[in-house]
Length: 270
Image (cartoon, rainbow, N blue to C red; front, side, top):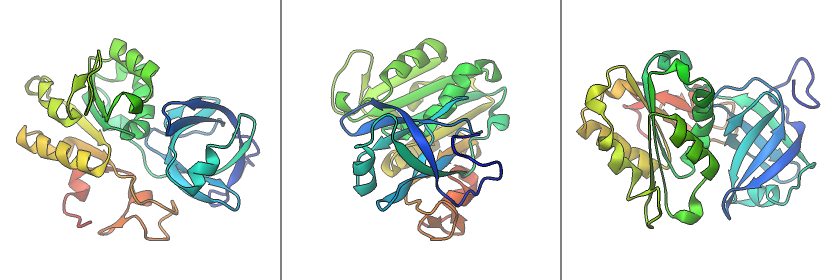
């Protein structure tokens, strides 16, 4: 159970939690480590809030037995106030919400994870899960890209993933740096041994233009589109399917997702 959490939890009511640690990643992204032992699955999110300020849906970027991590980007009123918090302060959360990445379906297969920019935050809990449970897969290929050196996230984890996973490709859009390829991460999908992988699954997370480019590349490479999974986190608001802010066609991203198989959303009009 989480701190101050009652046995019969009301998932609509924000609950106070303690900020255990704040870890700077970039000038605009900090990791907030929250004391919490609740069961959460990779891909889910919480509504993070501060009284009299507001709330926002934030994906869980790391899951452990004793704490959760949220990698938050400073982009508005709530996050501006959140960045003023210190270790030991109180933050409010409700959740977890949404579905999760289909770990059972991925089991025994070859997994490809393609993340762009802060999309890395939404998929890091999945990568950490397989870092600890690598025997559940045949192989794992991880590709991620950032705009420049100043925007690189999780540098220590990038090194750990490179040492553990089958193949990793890290990219910078605008600059040159040792250990990183130059260009868009979607351009490097074709460097994987795709013709040798049969039981493969592909997870794509990132800004919408990046996901559009990735899907276009998948089609050009004749990849099986029914084996592609997206996390669509944009425009979520209430987290419970009531405000309609994240509705796309007949789907509510916060309730039916945020994780979707491509076959379930390919005909939706956004």
